[in-house]
Length: 274
Image (cartoon, rainbow, N blue to C red; front, side):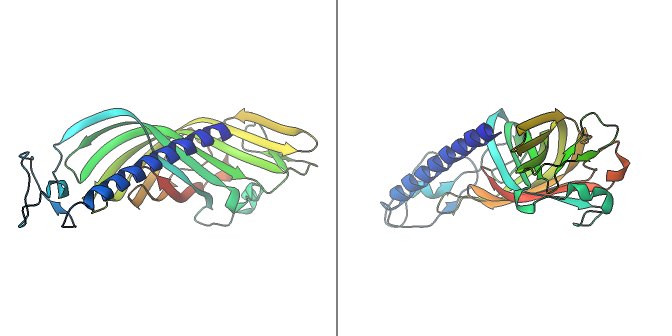
């Protein structure tokens, strides 16, 4: 997981550097013009220069609407990094039967990104697309317990070990359907984004990772009764390259484990790469 996050961070940093360089190039080009600002032109370009009253070419200020069309390809976008919160039957306080899942709020995280995308652009301002990627939720447990593998319901044992890390995680293949509104570019070449839609996740695996002086580092994989298919909604809002995200899943985090009925997952944080 650390290698994956490092790779993702390098990709994000590279994309950010490219975007910054593009902005710098555009800014340098703009300084050669006598008039600043930007105008919007609709329709197809006639490939002729647009001259102002002083005869200066201002063609670079015009943004032509894109023709409708489909798109498909690989991507590395919508990199989410935030906090995960458990909601127990509408409450942020865990009920007694779920108290063993008490977690460290600032170390319980959600990470995800998209790698594949298929969409349709209606115009320059609006498009719809379905994408595929990965999504991790890491619950940093407070209690010195071990969630049991292959148990009939979600259960645990109390350990006489002081774990320096006791993490309970899930990995999902995420398949969101996005409705993406984008404003026209401003003078700096940046847009305002508002994206929302439904999100479906397919469980890939669950994991318990523990670190202690007695046993060193241990990892055990199982489904741990995480729900096989989760469904919910998400929203992203931002400007330029970055923004904020929120995700909420309607069905329970765990299945075939009656004591955890009504326990749901909500995540929020920053997102990079619209």
